[in-house]
Image 1 (cartoon, protein in one colour):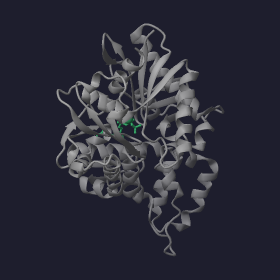
Image 2 (image 1 turned 90 degrees about the vertical axis):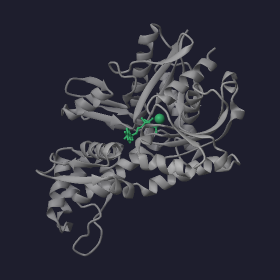
Image 3 (image 1 turned 180 degrees about the vertical axis):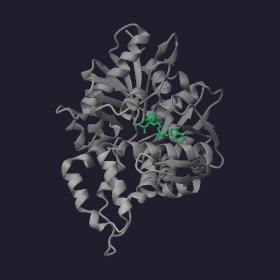
Image 4 (image 1 turned 90 degrees about the horizontal axis):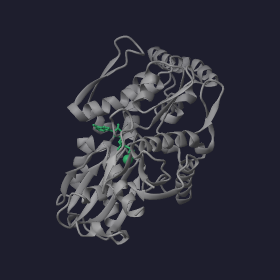
Length: 416
Ligand SMILES: Nc1ncnc2c1ncn2[C@@H]1O[C@H](COP(=O)(O)OP(=O)(O)OP(=O)(O)O)[C@@H](O)[C@H]1O
Ligand SMILES: [Mg+2]
């Protein structure tokens, strides 16, 4: 009986399985071995699309509901509530997660050529910050979702520890590594003793000197970019004729994936219409109204993420908002991104320092910092992290596959 290892990420997911003594990633969408954590419930054609296909179906304007960042609702009261699909039917958020986990499992089964009932699932160091009960609930919810699709024997491993196992598989000598896994929803750190001899041991608890994480990562940068750059042109932070800040709930909801749909409700739409007199720049109200009427919330969030990645790749970019208004384009550069995300960077770096401190180790004893997770593509962030450990060697892993591969390595040990 075979097994698989699932990296269910906030933004991207992957699944690994054993392959003749090694670990391989299953193709999960065409030839791709990772896919966006997204499901589109197409109510026009009564189909479900996953990953890139889900995002495309949504962009192509099919009727239906796009679900993303489902992981971030685990542990919250929302997880067990239902959400409308737009055709009169509704679905529980945890069932959306089950549907997505089932998709990954089936991709692994296609490679294995056999049903799979055993799995290692990754988990962030904290699903929920500063709330152990909510955190345990989150793991139980994820486990229940996995069980509901036929996974009977489930083991959890921390995502950054998995990344350490992946890093270790390439080492020739022993060392102390700080793994920095900066993903979409969480920034997770582990301080781990690694080395070719230690690798052979089954029990590695003593080698994990500390682990720690915060709920601040890629999607928080997107949110900041959207608020400070895009929604500023829609009235966020602007003042009404009496000098008070405009009601800002609509902006925060628009910038938060799982709340975007709430602003399209009839009550919210009429509220927005009634607020028109508060806007000293009516163009801002027009833009906001168009976003709501044309349901462009997800599109704006996507523009914010693209702007962030554009800056990561080239230092500057243009944010094209022509869907909202002709010729509305905003210049955006690294300085703006750094300013928007300053708080986030500081909190992430602090979490890294806290991890090392919790182990009773001084920063210069850290031999290497191993970077993984999509957000380590942000140079100012990885530089800030590397700067906190000036004597450590910065090592960049496979940003999107390290955790899944490491979970696969762990699964080999657990299921043998
Ligand atoms: N080139 C890039 N530069 C900067 N950020 C990037 C780049 N590519 C992807 N990202 C960001 O990386 C994040 C996704 O990273 P990743 O796939 O590691 O997260 P995840 O595993 O889904 O999330 P988590 O581990 O927090 O659950 C997104 O916020 C995305 O915008
Ligand atoms: Mg991840």
